[in-house]
Picture 1: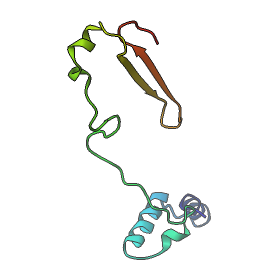
Picture 2 (picture 1 turned 45 degrees about the vertical axis):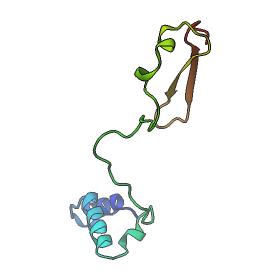
Picture 3 (picture 1 turned 30 degrees about the vertical axis):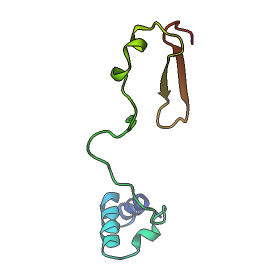
Length: 109
């Protein structure tokens, strides 16, 4: 039985109103104190992920040159062979990714 079912059964059988979050808090407090109540949860005491706060860490390519640092010859689009790429990544639930390539001087894709 999970904490939601326990809270529901307590209010139905004995008229005791207790939130399932109160039960979860008690289990977490017991876990921090060295107890093993978390082993009886449905997820079997799997480790919880911490919330991450602070600046966004996704979409950062460490050590990659930025667009504004490319040479003037590339910027003027007079030479062949300079390619531009872009990546589109699907939502968090998808594993889809789309890569587009275009030659800068001719626009050939």
